[in-house]
Length: 401
Image (cartoon, rainbow, N blue to C red; front, side, top):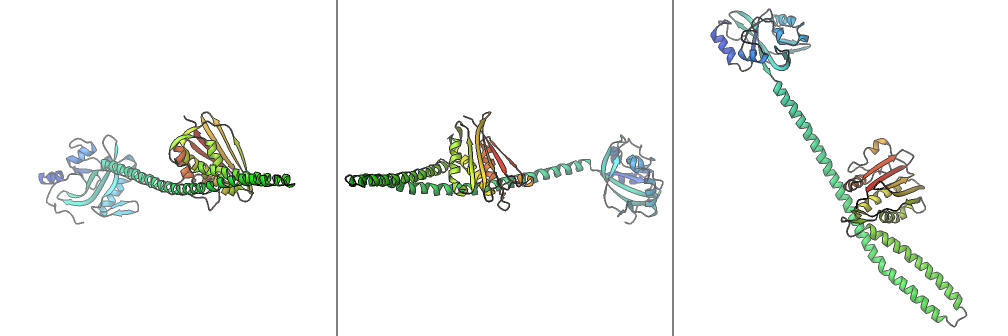
């Protein structure tokens, strides 16, 4: 940068002073000895000195104590070869730096400063223009915090959208299951009634036909056995239908009096094909009062947790389901002898969209939905598990009236 064309002016010239005062930032002129030769009113105001106090003072008075010892050397270096040197970095004339300055009171504050050489009639000087950026730095900090908050809100909103998407997917699956089971109930109920009626009619006719026969007694015994077998089959189908009806209630999302034990028994009955001849199921149900809840939602919770437990068991194993009342809360625990889950995955099982099918653990699939349903009912879920030692999922549901 070429020297400013002010070579005919002196420090005390009104024209030169007027030039300094037109600059809206703090301005100081430093001579070769490192002392302040001139300053404008803005500089006096920014640094807290009264009129005329700055003139003749070492420029080091405007900087923190920790920078003062080395600064005279930098001043001499600057006048020998005009450029700003800070450590390994060299800065062009007019290029702004952000440094720390010091007021008369001792308060430190950030400034943006640019330095350049100037030649006037009184000699060579370094012209420093400084701007107090305390408020600008505060504004940047607030903007940074605002951006951080905004990013957090975006992440939370994104997670909420993903959770809603998972809920919709799960609700669609359950709705389809409800439609399927409702159709099965309708299709099975009709032949069940016909089977029972046919058995009774056949038995009555056979007994009349064999009334005078020597084989009547044997025929009656055979027919009794057939009837008992048929009745047992009918009873088993009736229980299955009852479980399906409980699980696929028409009032899926409606709130009402819910029998938690009925829901557990129905869910256990429906997963029997997955447990038969492979998983030994034990139950320990203490009496529970009805709770005010959404039947279908809780049935879905029980089904998800039980299916996860069964899927976690490789080969043969055991499943224990217990329920009890404790301090106004229904406590339902599901313990499996599956492969278990490590701490890292346990921290993620409630994340929307998280799946554990790849690692086959008993506490993953649908757990985000399970937690949401329990949260909405004022309940909670806890998972205890160790790899190779199985898992225990504990559900707590308030027994509110």
